[in-house]
Amino acid sequence: MRSFRVSVPASTANVGPGFDSMGLAVNLYLTLHVEESEHWEFIQHSPPAPPSDYKDHFIYKVAKQIADRHHKKLPACKVTETSEIPLARGLGSSASAILAGIEIANQACDLNLSNEEKLQYGTEIEGHPDNIAPALFGGLVISVIIEEEIERIEFKDLQMDIVVSIPGVELKTEAARKVLPESYSKKHAASASAVSNLVVASLVSGDYALAGKMMERDLFHEPYRAKLIPNYDKIRLRAKEFGAYGSIISGAGPTMMSFVPSGNGATIANKMQTILPDYKVQALNIDTEGLKITYS
Image 1 (cartoon, helix red, strand yellow):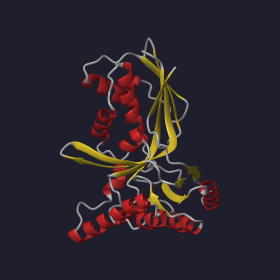
Image 2 (cartoon, helix red, strand yellow):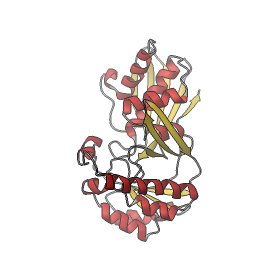
Image 3 (cartoon, rainbow, N blue to C red):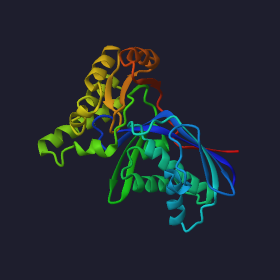
Image 4 (cartoon, helix red, strand yellow):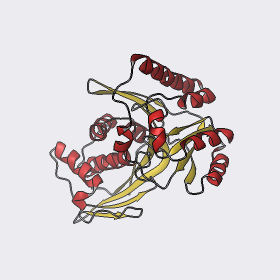
């Protein structure tokens, strides 16, 4: 097996009203250096510490699952892991880990998986493609599962910067899903879908001000999750005052993501940091490449 390096970007899901269907990759990365070894070993240069038994490592479990699916024996590897993606903050850490595990199996077992197969496997494990697809392909990806087939469209030319406001607390996706209603009225669903449609249309047309406005008008999940998000109203208000197009809950939260004019990310991030001293506020870019493999 050739030694290789796999890099997978973070991602945000929903992008306001694109609930469980719209995702965006950003330039925070999970990076693994993988080489064949006499025994399995995970070395992590970022928290948390790996489990004492490699068989309990989430990435190993995914790799083993994919290898078993193809009736292959997964060879022992030494995996050196570094991650810039905070856990349980709504930035797609689980999707990135899933794709990393799939790629370890793909390389170590010489599976020659296509991107479509990686998307299918990742979606089956994650349960939905909204984080998996952008982490795999990069950019903004809108996707849907219809009769077990995943349909998608990718956008790589959005001209915006990103500012993320990351609190020091975690929020598990399961908890964020529990506050959502089991069903919506026909009128409510129609209005929510119209808002989502307008977000997509405005992004495609380059009307980012309208896109930001509509992102903040979500009716599917943000009104219900807002109470779980620290400083939700404050971040939306102040980011808009500083020049943002709009701010959304990143995935299930608790991170908030603001979309800002291209070139203004660092300035607005600095201003947001002054009003959120207990947060980690970062200016980011949209990642347009997705998962990358290099060989050493």
